[in-house]
Image 1 (cartoon, rainbow, N blue to C red):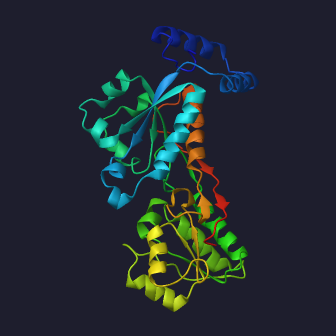
Image 2 (cartoon, rainbow, N blue to C red):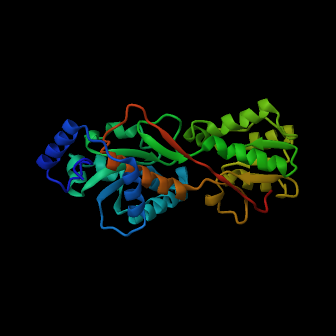
Image 3 (cartoon, rainbow, N blue to C red):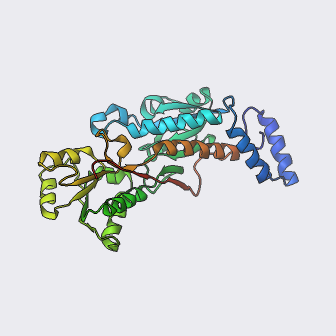
Length: 321
């Protein structure tokens, strides 16, 4: 416990143990560590420490702009389930309401016994504006992040999301496939969706033709209908139900006239759709496991070389394809 910087051991005792271990050249036995970890996972435990999950207020303050954050709620459920199983208590905190409004947020974190911080979407760069001593906490990102991150992160493999969708829609027999949704969605993924789609245009590895994508800055308008009339797709891959509704307003039937695959299947309000499950529940679960690993290693602050853990998405069959 002292070698892991467990705060239940007095600071002076921890220092003496660590100095003795360094003098003796002590290294933990990886086999015994693995055994201990398995034993830990299979038993209920009292709370080891508290973890904070930081949430951008905008997801809830501006639902009309950002949409209901069902993906975030799904991920937090995964975080909570894994935290309870592994002996941690999870405390949700709003970035502006709870931290930026507090003169000394470290005192707030200390009062709540928080040892680890989980950053969610939109928090990454904003985190640097909070007067927190980041060297005091283990830090990990979870959710919808682009390729660049300040800390280790667990996220959906966004490139694989469209890769799998393209393959499934093509194998279903569609010949002219298009990608259509707002550019803001693309930017949140670091344009990984667009990059994966552009790969299909270049490689031509399927019998289907992948037409130029339609990625407007705003909502679907006449330009979307012009795009359909020009390229005549028989299937569309999208992240936005507004494009599905626009298709229906044009008088096209789904899937008789045009197929639609949703790359946000789990959060789509339209019943029985085909598309991609991004498995945000697994993102939450793996985030807690990685946080446990960081706490066990006593790794604090922002790492010099952050690493990613990518969660593979899954295809779900439905009536729209």
